[in-house]
Length: 254
Image (tube, helix red, strand yellow):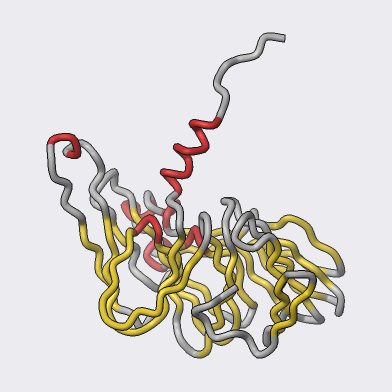
């Protein structure tokens, strides 16, 4: 499942699927690379922090708590900053196991792959929309300045995840891993996450020709250094246009 990653301590194949024996929890990824679903097994007192709205099903003795995270700048109450709170906030759902046999099934809002990234005493920078879940031992906060995009006053919100544990990432389409050693450029719409050892900057592509003057500029993230970079194969805007073409817009008269 992860050809470019160091595998977990033990991997067992069950009917063609992968069951990952992680430090705190067991996670099984179903329908890999198509429309993935994560099945997480929780034991007594284990905590799972997920993005709100991703719960598909659950079983066992679990307590559920919903929390709201926002950036420190928003928390200061500046009126101008408050207007951007929608892009600097995140609703989370916490599942805590009250017994030994519990299950939580998660499904991302967009169809695509789910991968597991193991963190050991360093920081992972994640696009907020690509965050699915992490173990309760992790710290999750808006510790990275958001990326301001040069059109429509939009921005790209990034999360910092630190500590020791596992992070579940979801992407639109398949997610692939790049072991960066030097420089690497990635379209910002294909970005999922990257390790904090990588330095980054946003570079705007130049459109040439009269036919391209009205289009939005292509934005790229240039990362330098050594570390892992995660990208998704599809872009949300292009995917939406593809689905729209397949819809039957003709009304039916009964």
